[in-house]
Amino acid sequence: MKPKIIYGIAIVLILASGVGNYTYNRYYQLPEAGYLRHYIETHVAPSVAFDLLYVANNADKRKIVSAQVDELPMLKFHPVQIHQELRHQTIYKLMGYYDGNMSWPGADPVKLHTITTFFSDGSVSEEEVGEIVAYQEVWSSTQNAESGPIQFSSGRSSSDNDGSTSVQITSPVTFTGISSAWLDKLGSLFEYEVKSTAQGRLTSGFTSGVTSGIDSPVEANASVELKSGQSLSLDYRFMLRQSPQAMEVYNLQLQMNFVEPNGNKHDYTVFANYSPYPTEAQMRTYVREQRRQVK
Amino acid sequence: MMRAYSQVAWGLALELIDIRFGSFDLFPDVIGFLLLLIGLSHLRMYDERFKIAWIAAGVLFILSVLQLFGLQIGFSLTNYETPSVPVLIYTSFSIAVDLVMLFGICRGIQRLALSWRKVELSRVAGSGWSVIFGLGFLMLFLFPFQLNYTLQDALPVVFLLALGYLVASLWVILLVRRAGRELPSNKGDPNPDPDLGNHVDIIA
Image 1 (cartoon, rainbow over the protein chains, first blue to last red):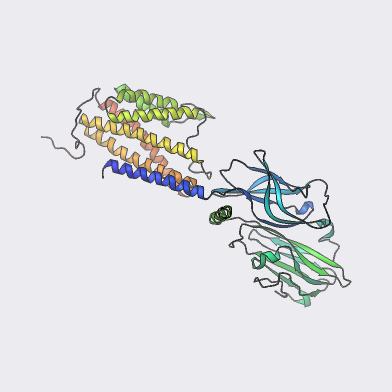
Image 2: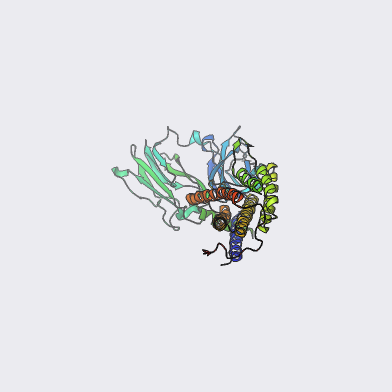
């Protein structure tokens, strides 16, 4: 083969590699940076502050610096850490904390949809964040109190998005169910199971609290009477990893609802969180979806 | 003419050697390209290909001056960071021009050696250029993939490729020095047999 033909083919291949890779790179850039969709329920208490995840192109010059909520000025998000680095995008984590006076704007829970976000170039913008439900109660003084009829026994949570909590009953109560703001939305993507040692033996999946399908009840209503010394455990698992909602963020406060014989109600709170760690393929799908929404 | 080859050899050596103390470069590329420009300016009258190498050296000299003013040329093949598109373009352009310069030097020596019937030198220069061209092509072809994929998984291949290109570039220095020793200081036969060196000649 003549050298000129070889050089010609080489130049064509190099240019094809350049143009092809550049086009592919451009195609998988987010049209604009933003927060992942969050579904958070939280109490305004220092110990239960939550984090936010923000995704931006690696090539973006404007970097996120901090964020705050206008409705809850004591809630701040700073500093920013890297949650996950991918080939074209980085997911940043904004560390949440409560600062200063715990004033409250009103009696009802606050629902937040936007966050005031500050950037490295000095710009400020209101960014969509999903939905955050903040309850007024100061969690640490009224919830999960050691003096109540339900006491913590053991608990665990794993990076595999599952966990369990076991509680000990110290005086007779009736377990009435599990509730959370996001159970309805999650449907079959969140499985949980309540077990108890009522009647002296371990009862597995005894209530309708095992949600295994969209039609299943999202709040376990079956009542179980528990005596002093018996225990109750809650196992849960997020089934989001391989689902279309894999890029959403969930912070659940699962309320195990109890009623004492005198009618006093007690809720025991179990925290169940899901943070996405997408694969490159999932991020590409997310970018394509964002591009479709912009069009 | 030997002096011109010596300048080209030193120029190539200074271009390749990169000794740094912090941000201070002991042998800035700009000196290497300046020597190449001077050496090739003498050689360009002997063959058209040396002229091509001289022009390429001029472009590389300008790029090396721009580097002194902050232009980034070059990026790591082994870290996770994606180079920016401009850096990738500058780096690829720089390597492409470097390849053109090596083409001019190797092919120039090949042609000049042929005119002086230095068959072995001509053959070595020709086959050496083929290896350099292959390695340079692979590097230029692979670079844009850095925009979308990490080359870390292919680290052994990338390492061998970079090492091969370095060794080939060092080999060009030896080739130039050999040319300086073996080729006389005039132009030789202006119309050499085009097939000379491409097959074994039996001369009675």
